[in-house]
Length: 326
Ligand code: NCD
Image (cartoon, rainbow, N blue to C red):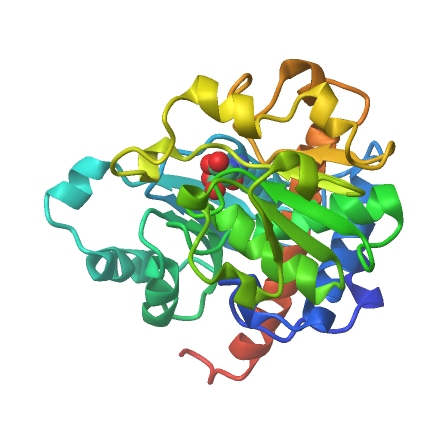
């Protein structure tokens, strides 16, 4: 089976470090490609040879189940040789720096490198140090998680037919969330109206400058929304007490059926996972008819296939420019 890529304009970037580097056209390009992959993935024959002979390394400095396996499936479906490298905290503690890691990686000659790191900006730093390799940010600290925002946009587009003009609420722990940041950037670029809802302690200062509306109350912020994105309370990124208790957080900011009724009757309920049931979302809503959480996981594979494919095309161009033997 051939690649649907022939139908799309070339993607203009060498790496995918954040939504902030992308124009609305770049985002649409990746979404169109991912949409084609989502259709193809539903067919019985979903193994392709586009990345045959390519080495794809998943380098994860933070534990991850769904993102890492999603990238792994995406790489394998496209025929790449996929290797998972989980860098435990122990080797970081032993003194290995990010630059040491880059030297090790360069010796392995990967073509595609997917990186998750606890430090904001660490993936970009690594991208500057690796040679002839496309780097994809799979989440850096509380900075960006671009493929999550793309899969969220694709899920919305496939359910609603568009993103433009929709009202989308992002709720909960905005301050520690790379998912929120990447989504604010991509949803705004695609023409949605973004509401952020959360307590003052979990809202980044001056966030209104990103063109969003900020609400302290779920009841007000959810009014007339087409999409509700819930976020996990990121306790591992909090030093000190940002919320009094999980019970109190649910009381004020949890999504239950009563609050959901404030949004449009056909509003979509989303969550990037992993969910804390009973903390940010009630099980009845998470498993209810309006929930598209399972679709998000499915779109994740399609988006990652699109990103790997788009970046690999540029890799070819760079490699074609090299002299023989280089
Ligand atoms: C998110 C992440 O790791 O940033 N999860 C994910 O990518 N599946 C959100 C989270 O951890 O809460």
